[in-house]
Length: 618
Image (tube, rainbow, N blue to C red; front, top):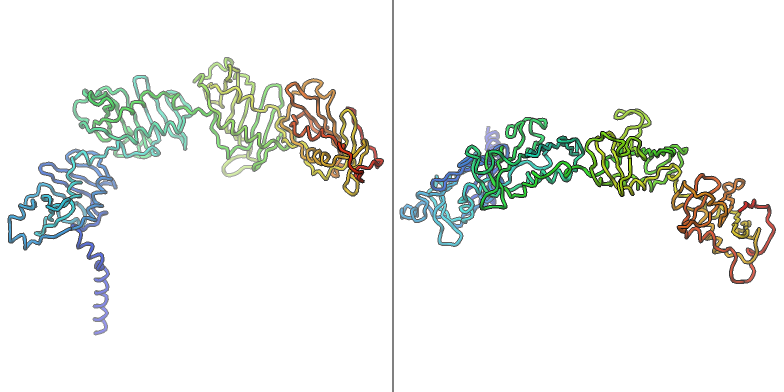
C-alpha cells in the first residue's frame, strides 16, 4: 500500500511538473502584459470611443466585419498579434497602491478607457484597456479588465490599434494569384475577348481560336491580381452613376480553378468568377479610375494603368512563335519540296540519320540548327484569320513543307506504333522579304521571314554529315596528286615516303599536312545544283589507297574556282558535290618537294614503285 501510494504521488508530481512552464518560460510569461496562444485567436474587437472595429479569421483569412464587411489586411492583423505576444511590462503599479489614491485611475486614464482591445478565441486573455501616455517617452498606461494593477508598457500596440477602419482593410484587390487563374474574359463596347488555359498554355477562344503568348497573358492577369486599391469609395448598393459604373466602360472577369466554371464550386466567386467593372475617372485624381469589384461588393479607385486592359486586342496577346512543340518528343523531321526527293530525318539519342538515303549519318549540327530555327521563329504578321483562299497565298500547293513528329516503333501503353504529328508548316508565296505560311490545320495565314525558309535544306543530299573521309593519316599508304603534273608517293616498310612519280627532296611537313587534311576531310556544305562543266577542267585530283581498302582506292576531285571564290569538290564514292574550305584546299595543294636542297635522305631517294598506281585523267 505504501509503495502504491508513493508511486501515485510520483506520477502526479511528474505530470504536474511536466505541464508547468519551466523557470525561464515562467519568467518570460510574467514579464508579458498578456499571454495567449496566437493560433487559437480567431477574432479581435477594437473599441475606440464610439467607433468599433471587428475582425474575424475564417479559413485562415482575416475579414473586417465592422464597421464595414470587407477583406482585411492579414499581414496587419498578424503583425499586431506577433507584437502582442512580445509586449512587455516596463513597470507595475499595484492595486493596493492605487486604492490608497483613487484619483490615480483617472490620472492614468484607465478608469473609463476609450480605447480597448479584446481578443476572441479559446483561452483568450482579458480585455485590454489603454489609458493616457506616461511621462516616460513612448510609454502608456495599460490595465486588464479583471485586474486592479496598472502597467506601464510600450505605446506600439496602442498606435497600431488607433488606426482608422480603412487601414485594416486589404488594399490588394483580390486574394487570387496569377497562377491560379484558368480563364479570362474582357468585355468592352468593341466586343468580347476570352482566353482559357489548356494544360500549361493559354489559348484565345474568342473572338477567334488561336495560341496565346503565355507571358503576355500572365502579365495581363497580374495587372488585376497585383492591383492595389488607392481609395475606398463606397459599397456598391447605392447610386453607381457618379462613378461611371451604371454602364461601365469595360468588364474584366477572372476565373480560378476554385470557381465552378473551372471545375469546383466557390461560395465567394461562384459561376460568375471575379468580376471587375471599370468606370469613370475622379475629377481630382486623374491618375486613378473608379472600379467596382463584385466579390467584395465595393467601389474603389485603382491606378489608371488598369485601363490598358480595355484597349488590349486579341492580336496583342497572340503567340508570335511560328509553332509550339515539345523538342523532347521530336525524333522525326520530314521535308518536302516540289521537284525534289523527300527528306526524312530520324533521331536516335543525339544522332540523326537520313532514312531515305539508307540511314546514312545526317548532319546533326544542321538538324539542331533547324530545330532551333523553327522553335524561335517569330511571325512577322498575322495575314488572315480565316484561310479561305489558300491559292491567294500559294498555300494550296506549298513550295516547301516541314513536318515534325514523334515516331514509335512499337505499341506501348501510352502510344501506338507509327508516326505521331507534332506540327506541320507549309510555306507558300513570297511577299517581299516575307513568305506566307500556315501551321497544320490552324485556320490562319501568317507571314514569316523569307530568309528563314531559304535556310531550310530541301534536298536529302544536303543533309549528309560533313565528314567526307574518316581515316587516320597513318592508314594512307599510297598517294597521287595531279595538277599540271603528277606527283606520286608510296609509304615504305620503315614508314618513310618515296617517290613513284616525281623527284627531288620530299617535303615531309607538307606531306603530313596533306595526309592529316585528307584523312579527316570535312565539307563546308553539300550542294546539289552543280554548275554545268564545273569539273571538266579540275584544278586538283588526288587518289589514294588505305590499309582499310587497299584494292578499291579513293579519289578526290576539286573543280576550278567559282566566280565567288569558293571551290567545289567531289569524291568517286558519293553523289553530289561539296564546298571545300580554303585552308583545306591550300593544305592539299601544298608542294611536296622541299624548296631548299638539304643532304639527300633515304626518304628522298628515288626507287621504282613496287606496283603501278592508277592515274586518273585530269
